[in-house]
Amino acid sequence: MSRYDRGKLSIIACNSGRKLAGRIAKHIREIYKNENHSKMDANFPIISSEEMVFSNGEVKTVINEHIRGDDVYIIQCIDDPLSERTVNDNLMALLSAVDAAYQSDAENITVILPQYPYSRQERRKAREGITAKLVAEFLEIAGAKRVLTLDIHADAIGGFFSSAKLENFHASGEIIKYYKQNYEKEGDFVVVAPDVGSAERARYYAKIFKHEMAVIDKARNYAKMSAIESMKLIGEVKDSNVFVVDDMIATGGTILNACRLLKDEGAKDIYLACTFPFLNGNAVSKFENAYKEGLIKRVIGTDAVYRGEEFILEHEWYEEVSISELFAHVIYRINHKLSLSAILDSDDPVSNIS
Ligand code: R5P
Image (cartoon, rainbow, N blue to C red):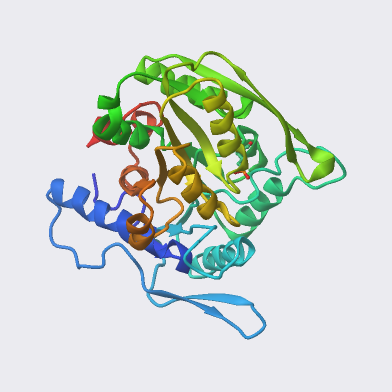
């Protein structure tokens, strides 16, 4: 088998995806080293590129190296708490990078987009657009052949692509491994879904941990900016520790209201885990207060939303699990035309294949 089965593996990092790209690239170098591949330069496989912003806010990506015929992976983190760039800025920056790679004659363009933007707009509830579908169309028009994402909010989004393929991976393997290493000694717990949309995820965690699960029935009022109208617990948490799992924490409204309900229902210690710790608005101070008042023990997030070392050191309640090794294996396997089932179907994908 030739080393570059699908063309040379090259990574392009958009500015907000640069930290994650660095971590992924480090793991790819390790995989190559373990495979006894010969020397590679220190920056392999990251391609030099620049993202320029004009005075009116327009963005342009320039690729500084030749990538003709390469198997290119473009990495972007759409919600970047460490910069002033908005979700829309970063979506446009990504599209400009994909187009730059297309114009540079890359053979295959794969987008690594852990946070799929507009994923909560995947169906019509009133006179509104299905913006998640528009995002799929934009990515295809720009030249993406494949989009790799993480814990996508709605599986239906896979069907919005007509020429490109969407592959959805899960952070649960990494989160479960982390929880087992660090907190399993705290004893049994009930896995809780903070809304019905998270029930399948909670069932998966409960199955792996071999613990009970409970679900919160959350109703939103769409006429009032989706405000939470009511929450009811289905299941038992009295005198048990609980582990609440969600795909994202935005304002924290869902999960903190869930925690209050769980405490009222007699829960002991509450651990939270989510793939996307967006923590928008004043969510950080809400969690700080919730921690100080003893409502929550820990929030485990992933670096799919890169918050940086300083944030982790400053906030005792926040812990980070990296999804970079998972994506490194995915990229390596796609580039070498190897099966992805071991990663897609496993509760511990990285250990399963490394
Ligand atoms: C809802 O369907 C999602 O899974 C999250 O629970 C929700 O979007 C989180 O938003 P917030 O933190 O603002 O309640």
